[in-house]
Image (cartoon, rainbow, N blue to C red; front, side, top):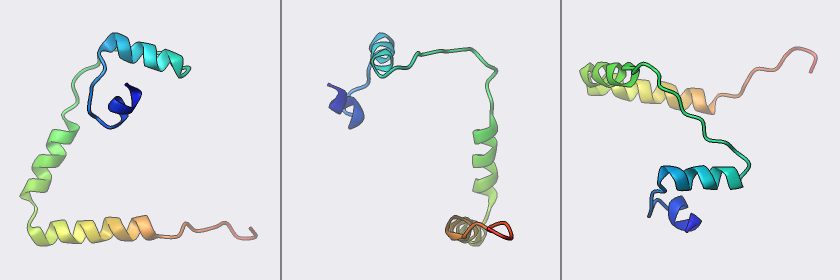
Length: 75
């Protein structure tokens, strides 16, 4: 059953999820928070970019991911 959850073949109900988490040593905690439109705003802004702007952004992100972190002097 766990394998089916891991492969996204099944979705556990809330009570099953709680039991699975408890067996793994975790406790499920939920809270209500105000809705954050952050992702919607970013998607709308990205849709306004040209293909060239999106390509440049993707190149910049890839360069950042491949960057080697600087080390402190003397280490």
